[in-house]
Image (cartoon, rainbow, N blue to C red; front, side, top):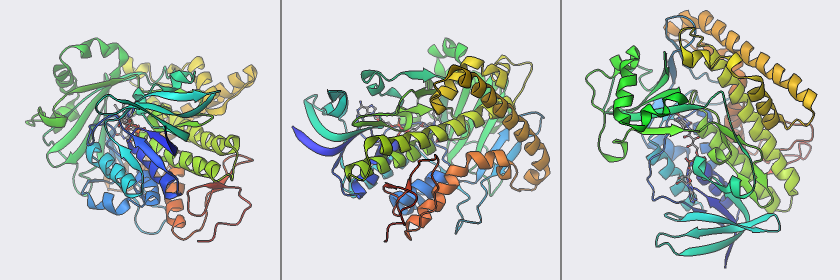
Length: 498
Ligand code: FAD
C-alpha cells in the first residue's frame, strides 16, 4: 500500500491551502480531487484577509494579482432601516505597509486552479478525477483513505494525517460519528445564475459587490468581468418547492420583484451556455460540526462549517482554517506538539472565528427589520430562538453546564441585538461620508471586531517574510504561530531565527 505523510481530500481553496503549507514544511502530500479542474464553484467575492493574508503566506500573491480579477474595494448595500443604500470600502490599517484595502471578485474556476497549480509547484502530488470513497480506520484512528481513480479502480493510501477539505458534500463526519448541526436561523436557499454584463457602480467602485434586500430575501450582484455578473437570490427554505421546477423562470421572477437588480440587468441576457449557463440552487449550507478533528483526521473549510453567503466569509474561513490545520499537522509531524495541544489550538481558533462571523451575521440580518415581510421578520434576533442560541454557544464554546449554557445563550442574543443596533447607528452616522465616497461602517467597532483576525492575518503574512511574530495566543494556554507561519510554538519561546 502507498504511504505518505498526509492525504488531503478536495482541491478547493481549503484543500490546496492546507496541502501547500504542509508540503512547504517538507512533508509528502497527496491531494485527491474528485473533479477535473477547472470546475465551477460559488463563493466569488473575497475578503482582503484571503488576498493579502493567506495568499501571501502561500507565496501565490503575484499570480493572483496577475490574473486580472475584478478589484473589489468594498460593497454597496440596500440593507437596514431607511430607503437609502449605503456603501463601505475596506479600510487600511496604519500598521500594514502598502495598500491592502481591496480584495477580488473571482471566477472560482480560475482562482481555484491557480491555488491548485501552486500546490503542485510546491511538491504536492495532485490527482484529479480521484474520488475518496472511505476513510481507513484502525482502533479509532484515521490512517488513510480508499479512493477510486478515473477508471474506477480502487486504491488505498496510508497517511499519518488526513485533511478533509471535501466541502459541503463531504461525508467523513458521518463515518466518524461527528454530528452536523444545521442553523435554524440561516436555513435559506440560494438560486443563482450569470448575466452577460449589467450596470456597475461609478468608478472607482465599479467592481464592488452589491447586496440588495427585498421583500422575499436578498440578492448578491457580483461583477466578475465586463461581460459577466454573478446574480443570486437568497430566499426562505419554504421556496424549495418553487425552485424544483423551472429554476431560470424562478430566478427571473425574483429579479422582477427586486427593482434595483431588475434595473441593473435591464436589457442584459442571462448566460445560457458553458459553465455559467445553468441556473443553480444551493440549500442546507449553514451548519457546524460538533468536532473538527479526531485522531489522524482534521476537517477544514466547508467540510467543517459554513455560516451564510452575506459578507463573503466562506473563502476566508476555508483558507484560514486550512492555514491553522497545516500549522497543527506540521507541529505534530515534527514531534513538537502532542495532538491534543496541536489540534486543540486549531479548533479553538477556528470556532472562535466561526462564532464571530455567526454573531455578526445574525446582527446584520436583524438590521433589515421589515415588518411586512415574512422573510425578514423570521430573521431578526428574536428569530434566533433560545435553542438555536444554545446550540451555537455549545458549538463555539463547548459548554458543559446547563445553567451556564442558558446564561451564555442569553448573552449571545444580547450581543447580536447590540451588533444590529450599533451597525444601524453607524450606517446612519456615516451616510454623508458614504455618499462622499468615504469609509463608513468599515471603520465601526463592530465590523472592526469581526475583521480583526483578517487584519492580524495580513500583518502576520508580512511579518512572516521577516521572521517577526506578532500574533497573540487566543486562550490562556494558547500557542502562537512560528516565525515562518508554518507551525505553532509557545508564546514564551523567542521567534524562530530566519
Ligand atoms: P469547496 O470549494 O467546495 O471544495 C471542495 C472540493 O472537494 C471540490 O473541488 C470537490 O470536488 C472536492 N471533493 C468533494 N468530495 C470529494 C471526494 N469524496 N473525493 C475527492 N474530492 C472531493 N464564500 C465567499 O467567500 N464569498 C462569497 O461570495 C460566497 N458566496 C456563497 C454563496 C452561496 C450560495 C454559498 C452556498 C456559499 C458561498 N460562499 C461564499 C462560500 C464558499 O462557496 C465556500 O465557503 C468555499 O467554496 C469553501 O471552500 P472549500 O475548499 O472548503 O470547499
